[in-house]
Length: 365
Image 1 (cartoon, rainbow, N blue to C red):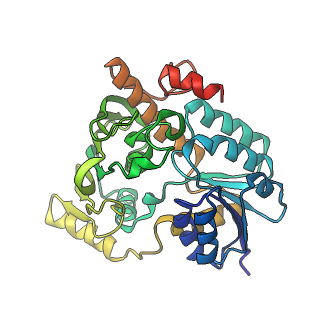
Image 2: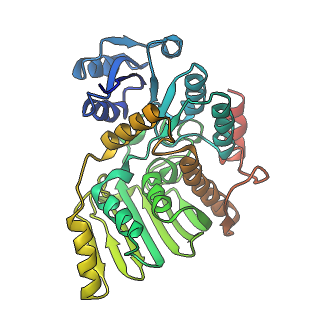
């Protein structure tokens, strides 16, 4: 009989998506308690998802011995401390993006995990599990894509004044960054998921759409360690919202749909250079068996990792790769220079990419 894992959820915003993912995995998970400072939203989620307990005391979840997992779906500035408490209380942890506010925090969490062997932390990158993207991964694994040349990624969404009416959004201290960190990070994770780590980035960033502290528009040119190039564009000022991923290989061009929040899903297009190679690709794709995607699939794989004591499907290193790109992009924007990766402890933004005044203010809180 499959062992059910018990989850305590902290948050009542994006937590609704997590609860839906757990709900599609009822044989693997149960959620006995939800914690949120927003009582109206928290109690509403408890009712909708049949959660027996509501609390505003996060520490009470860490103290319990009947929970296997703490799921953190709170504003970004709280993530590190909540993850630390979760691991140190003997729980596994799931945490929404962006994972932390610096590469230093990622590395410190690695040291914390080393002190608690068997405890697992899984960052959220649920876009990886769409069928279209999984088909591309399959074709690469089968050797049918060939040498990578160029990737283009567009994250063109709309966020107006109502979105930024939420107090923690749009400022460095609590959101920790703008569209590069909180919106395009999913699509940019796909770049690393397909090609591996980045090697260098040149970036322009600007605040053009709303009167906020952080960037809402950016353009990046990236060198990958595998030798290919990428161009990434992000804006929160697109009245027609789209997300688009396009991968050019020697033997294949793969292109996503443009639905803004489900671009990893089918139907993707896969176009080869010859009829013979197209037939090989079509044969592999015809045998592909689609399964669950998004949060549902990521949580399913996390259950397997816990039960079998293997690495989680998304690792701390995966989150580090994504945050290195953000860190390097911010540094490039401020210096006007290309910025190499990885980001080591001697990098000026290793401990924080916040502007100097905001970093000092955050450090005293």
